[in-house]
Length: 231
Length: 237
Image (tube, each protein chain N blue to C red):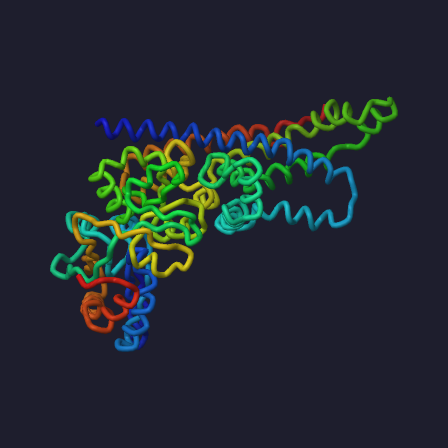
């Protein structure tokens, strides 16, 4: 009984950690993904489509490949890992921040792609009208472009959140599995099954399913085209 | 499983084996197949606990080789194995390893409490035998509770070995045989365990290839297989 309640509390800790990791990853991607997508939709530059393919890579690459890249780059012997350690004493492997980085990279394309499509599908006339009225570029972005594209971005944002919350392969390699530190829901499920703790696994799986269903339901309601009306 | 195998095509024998056996078993398989031309060995390597769960959930496995008695006992309790076929076929020892280029080498278990050992990797005790052995030893020396905050859990012994080899952790508990195959780690010392670390092997009760499974079990106790095992540092049972 005691052991059972302990396991259940571990499930809630795992859920909280999952939401924290996915939330941070989504926040990072909101800024980076939307920013870069805006750049892509408005500027022409050499190698744009190659860079687009590179940025979309995490979506199609196996998570273990990504995890290995991260382990090699961010680890003690990696270029970035050594730099971070010698300059600021930061070690990312086996920390929840490391899990955030893994989740952010994996889910980045979902926001980037959605935001780029949203920006590119906007009618140019509103921005042009504002330009004629000498509204500053910053104001045009925040008061016209972003509100018009928001629905598409939000849908991508929710999908990215769900993907980040479900991250497993790369996270397991980079962040390990430390209860309360880096043990997210998906990793906790894997471990419970391996150890034959079916009760814990059942509970965790149910919890995860509810979280995923909620995210999908919300993102479905926000999908462009569903609610858009032309009056 | 499928039934389309024709008379002349070989029988595929699925052997679920503990991660620590990976290298030795991969070398044993071709020797066995050479002698038994009608049998193909197919390996499934993972932590013993994971192997047990796979079989418990109905995975079509013919032979189970685990790294500890507890896992095999659990398999026996659940009537998953043919009890009569169970044998201890090899032995191992627990060691503490540190990265090859480590500046200092711990001399005893209590050295791990020092500040320069921030992270220590062990197999997850719930499913990885080497982790269970480690936990028992540390508990016996009243070090477990103090070391727990430093512990990184690995999914199997080879992941633990890899983390030490990459220098991501300051030390790790693995088998002597694992330490031998990685040039990037050095053994600090052998950790004495209460019980000898013995590896049991048995036929899975639901195996559809009983005859072939028994042939493989017999081969494992023979001189050829034992010679390969000892080449990789495994001991006599």
